[in-house]
Amino acid sequence: EVKGKDVSARSVSNNRSILNLQPDAYRLPDDFPAAQIFEDDSTSYGVVVHLNKLIGDRDPLPINVSVSYNKSDNFQVTNTRRNVYGTPIANPTGETKDYGVLLSTKDGKFSLRAVKYETSVTNANAELSNPAGIGGTIAQGLRFRNVFLYDLALYDWGSRESPQQRNTWGGPAGSFSFPTADSSITVEEGRAREDAAIRTWNEIQAYLTDKGFFEAWGFTPQPLSVLTDRTTYEANPGAYVPPDTSRVFAYVATAPQGFTVTADTESKGYEFELTANPLPNWRVAFNASKTEATRNTVGDADLTELIDFLDSKLYNPDGTPSLAGAMPQFGNTGLSINNNNYNPWHAGYTLMKIQEGAAAPEIRKWRYNVVTNYMFTHGVLKGVGLGASYRWQDKVVIGYPVIQEGARFTYDLSRPYYGPEEDAVDLWASYERKLTDKIRWKIQLNVRNAFAKEELIPISVQPDGQTWASVRIAPNQEWFVTNTFSF
Image: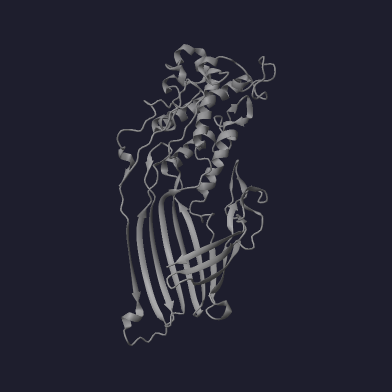
């Protein structure tokens, strides 16, 4: 059983949205919430059958053969994670099955082990860049809904009825004593767009209120009962004054503590391990693995439903921006809610969603390692050991080209961009001897990444496939000496 409790500081709307850290507000609850008490069990079992022993003394097989089967269920204890509406998410759970066979020579000098495995994980963390950006988009949309509804010069109620470019969508030059956001349309067209955009954002607020979004994200707009469009408000302002005007402010969305986007993953693959002892003092080991992983159920049902709803409000069916999505910010149609807020966040969400059912891009399909060690047991080099290893890993997806579908853009998963294969060599030399009848001494020099170069390795690329978006420093050469005394 795992219990958790936590608290998130709320913003103070009438004081620049600073966080309220007063002891009476920012304190842990006395009891553990029922939704944050998790119970689960972990079970595992396995069986190994040595075929030679089943046959008995009359073993006709030229080699030893063993087969195995293992199955395990487990869960991971995490900090409390929450979805977009603040609802606690169950701990990640997993199940693994593997089937193996071990072949070895009668003298034990050579052995080969092969394993096929299948692993599934439910409610694992998904990779979404800036997951909290969805809250920022909604907060900014409602901010500018208020700007156009009340002709705000800033974001607060005290700056209302201040006509200017910031809160006037359209009108040719000379229509007002100031320029408008879009001088290519008439004043009437501009007002019609304002009213339509405001009504749509009112609908978005109504939808989110019913879902508990604002409670989870720590800000509360004015109540739905006083919301209308600009034309209606202008005709009778007194009928639509919010009962608490401090709710008209620069909303700041604070993600629910532990906000996480989840996905289910399935991994399948093979592991191979070959061990050889050609001489009593020479050992060679080789291992390789092949892994293929897919993601399913990317983003829970609540998040998927929310994004589908927002898409229907901020885009037209043909993919062009709706008036709510095209609502200009700061008197600039180029800085619309979609262009400046929703689209950048939506690009990361789209990339995450279209990978549903596809191979996980961060997984390298193949890896292998070779290790060898030789110990001199006679002559002048008695006690000297020499060893080396070689490590190799397959290329990995670091980006995708962008393609246009209608009026919107998405990623082409069929033509991924790959990062380089990577390999490394490790070397070591040792010497050991007895110091006394009871004490044995060993000194070893290790060189890791012996032939490393000073270079950068791309982690991600821009859609052109050439421009690196992020990089990491290649592993550097390291050497160290160890002294070991055993007794």
